[in-house]
Length: 322
Image (cartoon, rainbow, N blue to C red):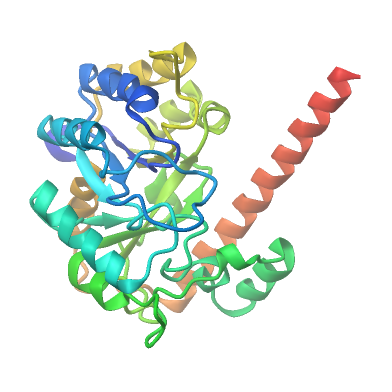
């Protein structure tokens, strides 16, 4: 790839808003701003009512939090949607959240990411997959009620697929261990004709918590990303332990500084996807059956590898404590 400004590679971050509060994530964004990163942060517009999911945090109904989010938007960070609230929301609530988003941030959300546990998710759980890959996922995960989704089911009280199609350009889907997201998913942003309510899907690189981020985002992996002239869209939860007591974890800061010193292109997620989408030679972004099968298989393999590592890590901690 040839990146803007003659940069050797591109690097951006999608921050999932789980656990996010000003205290937990502001120190991270202060460092990102100092290092000239301008990344993408998702939000919940509403608190919601009823049983919340376990990964809750602040919503934009908190005036101080909303003010801070608007401040970072003014500094060049992109604001995205992570469902209406950290709780299952009916269509009327989602519609209200979208209108609130437009009023507070000046435009509809370019990007949406499903929030685990919300039943109005779009094409979530086993519906992320097709063919025999769906059956494997069902058997491997013993899919729970929290993974079922109705946001794309016409006629259901949780349906909002048409609103997503109207307002949202990009929706996050598969997450891979490889930092070079474009190598894992060269078709992105892509349209899946069997999932018509999402205009375009994109993938990301696994850095969901600090431990996984540090395991995947090593200096050697970043060097490889640079050699490949690749694009990394890191998927993180900055509210989940990347800072503590007002200070960014030093090992995480060192990785950010290492990336910044290489002087890559540092776009928001939408800027990166727009560059890919409009810079491509082909007229259609609709993914082929063969290409989608490859993406699904690779995701299942990566998901299995992460699960094995987690089991091994827990076992090792148990052995050490004996």
